[in-house]
Length: 112
Length: 114
Image 1 (cartoon, rainbow over the protein chains, first blue to last red):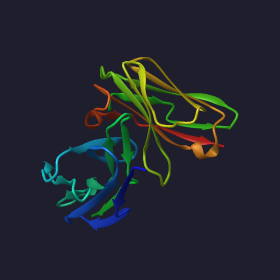
Image 2: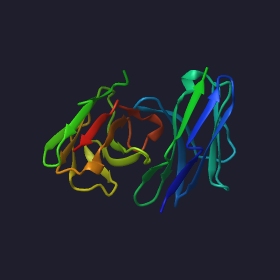
Image 3: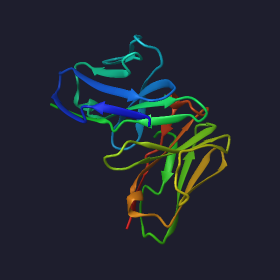
């Protein structure tokens, strides 16, 4: 059974801290890995990763994929209160029937 | 405003009721999706429509019945639901099917089944 596991499930930090969120996966026929930020209700897309070792970066956020060890990390530097959200990791599998498998998410709280 | 709207935003229904959730996208996209997000469970992709045709049905019970009359509208018809179906139902759209990196999500419908 395809599985995506995120850790930690929740995290509380202070503004200015750097955080690393983890996502490991066990799926058949991996195609890509995605990170989303979910504030309140609607998730917003952050990164899509398909190749190992290539860092994707957007402002203070960055992410990298390791296809050999089957995990990805999402880094946030100099955190701000606006970074408080649930961060979702999802893996797209390819094959006869494509599937999108999500982890449970990491709830990040950034305190002033 | 994300360009994807969902109505109603909140819905409470009994197990014998029939109700429908509506999603509308104003982005000119061709693919639309239904997701379910239950408390303490991962987000689940339920259905995918591409150019009004259903392309994915991820083992969803028949008490959930999707309908896509055109590329801009997507419905989820609900009947004889169970309390465990209480969840946030999210709709999304993208220009093409499987463009998960380009999806826009709606605000969701919070469904409670009594």
